[in-house]
Image 1 (cartoon, rainbow, N blue to C red):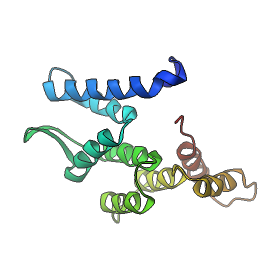
Image 2 (image 1 turned 45 degrees about the horizontal axis):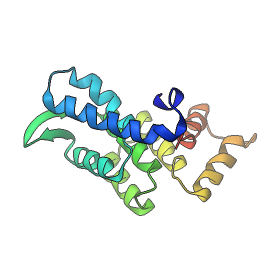
Image 3 (image 1 turned 60 degrees about the vertical axis):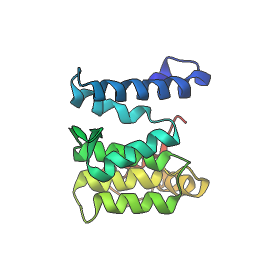
Image 4 (image 1 turned 90 degrees about the vertical axis):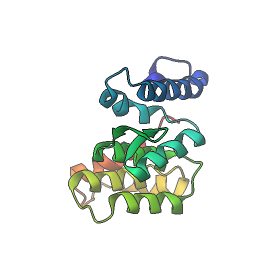
Length: 158
């Protein structure tokens, strides 16, 4: 949403600063942590920020100096995965490994939608072309939910 109100040349810097501010609030503990965690992943901007969040994902929790700050829900994990797959700083192979480690054998609707969103969100021309062809195929046999997930993953402001 920050990209709707700022000049495009300012968005990355301000998003990065907002991520850092939200993490600071989480660590300080003087806020509703659940609300902050719900939004913090939207502002991951740098490789270093993503690497920090990947540590949280691996542990399924946020810690500060060894103290538990917050336990991640599946919804939070799905948000991290979607942001990871849009990030050009990490290889496709690494992203797929993290996806499988995180989702494993989970075949629930939210997990399946996350898989679809992640794959259509990859920042490479071939993945985008494949997603676009699937989205615009008038003879597609995919469900509306699957097509919506692809559309959601396809779009990225950055």
